[in-house]
Length: 294
Image (cartoon, rainbow, N blue to C red):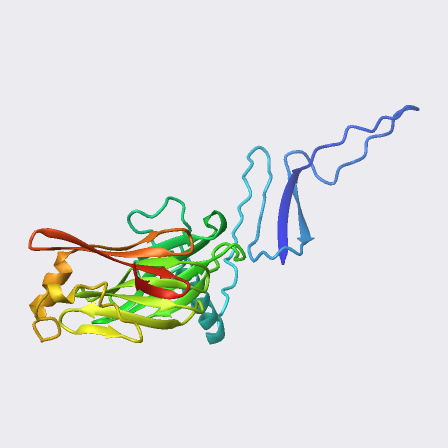
């Protein structure tokens, strides 16, 4: 591109040139006083400019230079570019959607990133290991009607910040508790649709080994896990006989379902409930060998 600079010079009569040795005769001027001569200078530049800058200097008035710049050319995106940008944006949105700590969670307890959940709230947690350096956090990631998907997320000292192992668990409406002996052996306490409770046992750290539950409208359910000594079917007549109200009466009677740590390698599972104004407490023990009556 070219920039054009026009300079108008006021010609004057040169009076003479002086030197250290003498004087010289005056040199006649090509112009007479009161007239002007114009000189145009063309400057080649490599700047990526599409406008023209013109400056004009005259006597006695002076005007400032003006510059006009065109916008840079627009980038054209291919469909592959758009697909990639959408994928990256989606990944970042998921990665920064952290699980919200539940009520009573320790301050500063790290939380995993949620998957698919819009406003994920942590349901349960457990810290264990040396200096509580290992953590389990459970939250509900998806729910459709009576179908719920939970994620059990593990973070250990060998993990980088923000890195969690994830275990899918589809059993109940809510996980109300978790207790871990180590990374491989832990249990989860389950709420079955606001009607009953259950327990799931993990023995390899990733797959549910066995579980048992009690919901009065359904009776006992178990996979090689009998929990009749823990759940009080005899206190709620009509269990398993199609009387749905019995289930809700049982659920509303429960005042506590939780784990108490004993020695870091075992815990006490506690069910507390009220019947006819009287408080009751039933317990079981969990260790690396499984669950048994206390």
